[in-house]
Length: 266
Image (cartoon, rainbow, N blue to C red; front, side):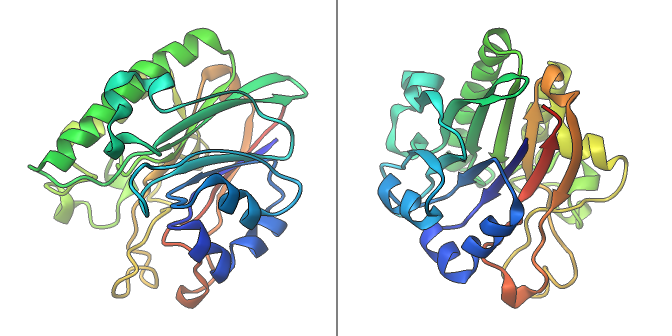
């Protein structure tokens, strides 16, 4: 089973720039999308035939939005407050969490698409980010209890350690690399969640999944690894390969992220 995650940075714009071509060639069974910024009917229409699509749109137009697309039917769909609790019902927290079950030859796999916004140190935006991280952490504990095979994936907007950001020394006080944020990812790992990308890539710099659209960040590979697939131990054991589908050149980019693609032997 090939599972991918990508922040599309607006599904309409991504479709115009080449998302469809990637989707047709990637050979994925499941794709999780973040920042779709469109209602379900538009997202499903742009993905095309052959996909079963579920989505939680953001109540604030033009922001956030998460979706799961699968070649086979999706069951047990839960999103937003139904998964994360009533405090996540504020508009700013909508369009950030959706989960569903997909069948595999080895049995059911619970799939989660999540989007944590970037935040801004010392502002209410940062408090909102921590609130969502707290709710996500609590939900992840429940998922581990209820499902054997689970994968929580998406744009977390946190680089875990120095290997995950090119200019880590210059970003020690920046949102996305604050000690308090990074501690959440450490907590998930200590709870048994496996960072599939880092596990399969090993102890090396990157590979990154996001580059600023400004300056020469993409050409110089001055990026951040902020997109993840966190798998439960049973599913992690089945992970056989990982790749980042980095676009060939700056002008061929259809999003500021690159898809993170993992193969699971199921």
